[in-house]
Image 1 (tube, one colour):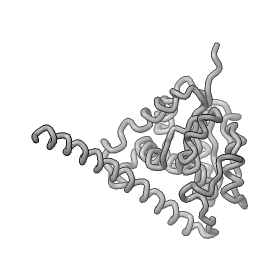
Image 2 (cartoon, one colour):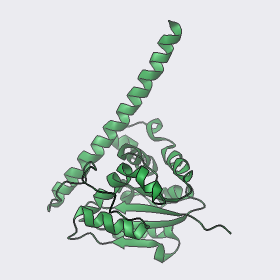
Image 3 (tube, one colour):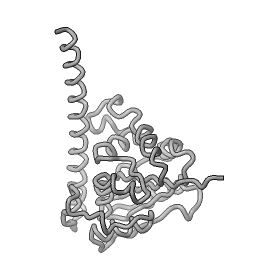
Image 4 (spheres, one colour):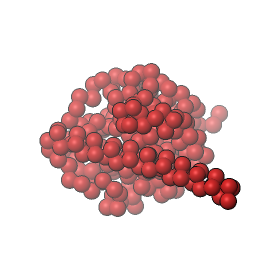
Length: 222
């Protein structure tokens, strides 16, 4: 019987673990060479998938159609690499048990592992919710980030998943080089701005798609 590939889901609460999502997206091509396929190739993609799975599109000024089917599309695309899968998005920390179950259903055939990075918020609820997704306790991994720099968190995450980070530097990764603030309010403001930026990227993509569609119609009329 063929060995199952693993699917690593990073569920982070605000903190140093925020670096993982943009780093995975930025290095998605290089990661495939290391035997790991990032589901998202941009933070806009990961944001859209998390919004879909948490049913929070209205909170971000989006329509259901803007995000519908995003998670399944990402899983199917990444699965073509026939490698272990990896995904990160902080919105997943607020997912309900039913939402987690739907997310995991799309990963059928994979051995699901969950990595929870600690932060300034209470991760007890997230731990309990995602434990069921792992099926076995040893597949839930808690990565302590207190006192760690983003580069240290990125290295520890890579070691856990099974890829080296020496060639996957953070210097060119958007949002990965910022100095971590000490106040909870500052961290939440940074997270809010990052999500707002991702939401704007989604809306710009939708507007561009509509523009191209209108142009094709005008070309046919001409």
